[in-house]
Length: 259
Image 1 (tube, helix red, strand yellow):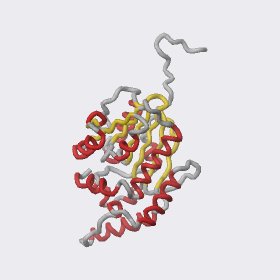
Image 2 (cartoon, rainbow, N blue to C red):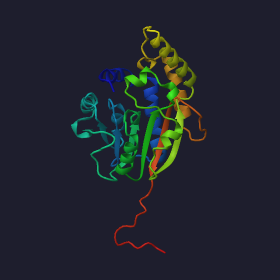
Image 3 (cartoon, rainbow, N blue to C red):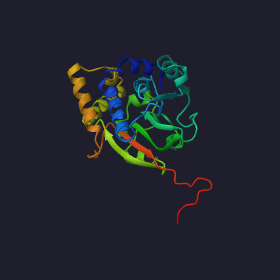
Image 4 (cartoon, one colour):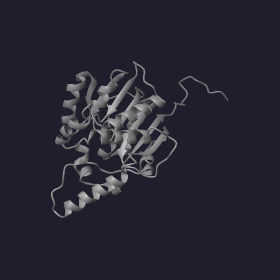
């Protein structure tokens, strides 16, 4: 991610409906499938500015990983040296089966080898451990925002599920940020047209907090539609996947399976 984007993010992420809502959604799904205990380890891969990791510190042990120098500097200031490692999602400095919960929030789209990242998530999680992953959805929404943030791709539900290793059980896989999809599509196409015409483009809506009433309404709608597993939406601005590592069925040395 471009260095200046960390400053843009840090300026708005505490209160902006999208960033605050996403953190609330992720906490909801963790509580649904793997409630945290104080001695558990949560690894936030691609932790960015560290706001989510900081919010989770009161619940469990937290380790933040990122491979961008700008992010690592922010993380160390917020979380302390011992809670941060400079590392990529495809090569985490962690033992096999050592993590209880792993989060990768809008991260793997930045990784060229997203298959390798998913395999690494599976490796470090304990059997029964849960991964919560969010990604941007639909290449039809590709815009200057994706270019600036150095995305390799946007996903469909099928393409995201296509990189999930067989060692995972899929607990939830759904489109999110559904209500604003038509608006986001129209705005991004309009920005793309202005860019091609050489017209100056306004600041992105992601970098500005809306009026308080609108910010609250958008956040409520975002969270409400994402914190359910009954309706499978056909499209959305983003996707969430909640995955659980299957139990290790390999018999321990010297163990004889029952006939």
